[in-house]
Image (cartoon, rainbow, N blue to C red; front, side):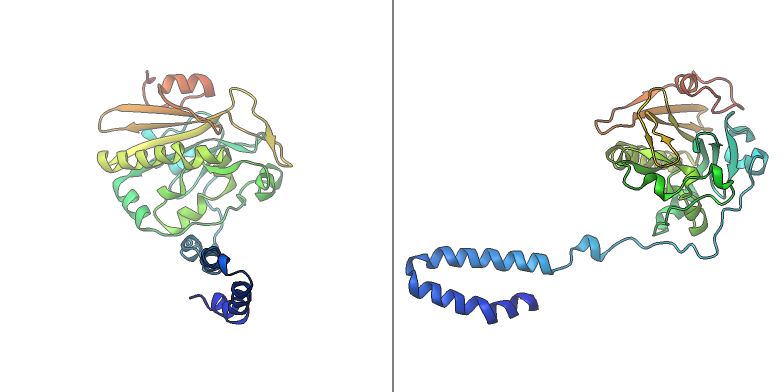
Length: 284
């Protein structure tokens, strides 16, 4: 028995029970059931839950800064199919992913990664997450931070998933707010997570895939934070497999009663207004 419960019963439980039974003998069975329920409740309250005891480790940010090149997609051409980045935003290069950043919105328009079998295997073996942080490469007037998301009712949603990152440095980089947009929490932890897992499975199956992910603002949802970040109405992801020459697209509505569906690359490009794979012929 838990020490707290044992001490309580020794000091208070037994004397009270004896007095009550002497005065109201018929209450014996009822009081016994109540006592059992009370002990179980106190034991539950005083015992740590496993989900707290086995929390995820946190990757240290000591000595880490965002150091990738800014504004020159040629510096991270290996992340793009044919070496050409999507045709929108200022390109922020990172170790294993890049984003196209819109400084006026203070949000990313897209993220890109070249995901291969070895990277997925290394990412699965890497445990721990990082803390969200500002992108120190951006001028302070173009950055967002934790205050924009705090008590907003929206999750800080990754474009490039942290679970795709194969080493502590790249995983830490993926928690930069330049890779983050407001996302519905239920959608984030449900179908969107499944879509990310399916993408990793495809990379393992085909050996290498190119992935472009982004938000869309085709209808007004609202804004959050002191920086008035516009909440996307949906999210999209496109995966191109060089082994087959095919690209697949999916869109999820950014809402609690989410809906996800397969769409063509061309349909996504029409909504967002830029080319996703400019090195390839237009995808149907």
